Image (cartoon, rainbow, N blue to C red):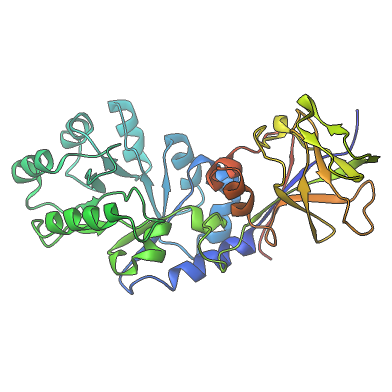
Length: 353
């Protein structure tokens, strides 16, 4: 059994820097909810909560188990972002003092008979067409049950990363028009990372920030990738012009080349679809993937790399090589890469001092 291992290093100080930077974009009245679903986007949910709790006003999760787990480490608001789906889940949510999103009538029927409409967020469909009440249906329910209640009205923008997308204007107008019909105790929440960056006038009472915390937002260089995925070179070889590399012989040498084989593959979470030419970094120098990713290995063109040796680290993304680079060049999204790193990769969490 080899002791060589690939590593995923998580730097909590970068998480904190990203949060502080993004919070500076908010209106003074806006509260900051850190979205930490899916094990904090693969960053280790408990460690993240411990290291950012002083910077945030609440947390957003999807799974009830995650909410219960972090309640032991924070007294801040915890929102179940898809709500509950049974009486049993509702009872557990109440026991742990969780906020609930209500996005359909079945969920509302569960909560309306159990609590006095406490800690509820009502999700409205303004164009995402995924979850949420249709506006007319919600208004009927509002007039019957909610016209004097305190709650949070929310929606989700479908294209917030694209400032010029017309859907943003349409969705924000629908939300504004609806919110004007609410009683004065109703709070508002729309903004995810893209909305905060592109439409800071719409941060309202609560923002729900996810990918920006972890450095996966690709339109602002001040937001840094908090993960480093790296693995060592285990072999170096020289190939001649015309020779092929890897499965299916996809990569063909157009000249004599030096090829490094790196101890990371699709069984570790690197997508098998990674293209030739995808940038990686060895010894602070950019080089490129050359050949199809296999289960345990990836081949890299290191022809132009100075002083490249077996044992040197190859970084696939890091603070200095943004995760958005590999995502954009492969028609992927940062979320997929962050949450896809597998268990056999050694995970190292650098906590704050």
